Image (tube, rainbow, N blue to C red):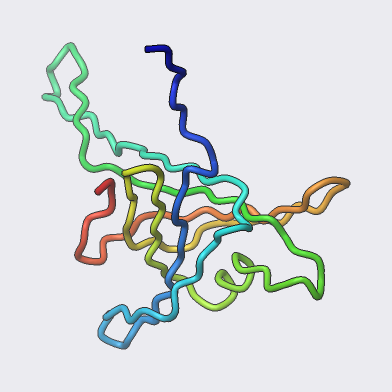
Length: 147
């Protein structure tokens, strides 16, 4: 039977949400209302960066590298809406919280975990205008990764 490759497309992402987290004096995270980016997200990049340390004896002639842990990150881009046409969800989210529960579902895979906001920038140009935000994984007592 003939067929074509079933490549993942942007429209195959079925959920992309950020849930702002309030931090109590004892460090407990409490969720606020989840913010969905359906209809306004432009792209999202999931990356892992293994933290590697060289561990070897002082008289060793070869380097031995060991992965200590994986550092997860998410780079997200959302479209900026014109004034009066809606809330710029990513800008608003970044202004209201430092910690989030991030969920990204593509096809049958879901990334979920607690993150802290990193650097962000807004680009306004001739064509589409976007906000770019980076999020870095944190240890909140639960693993981040693919489910």
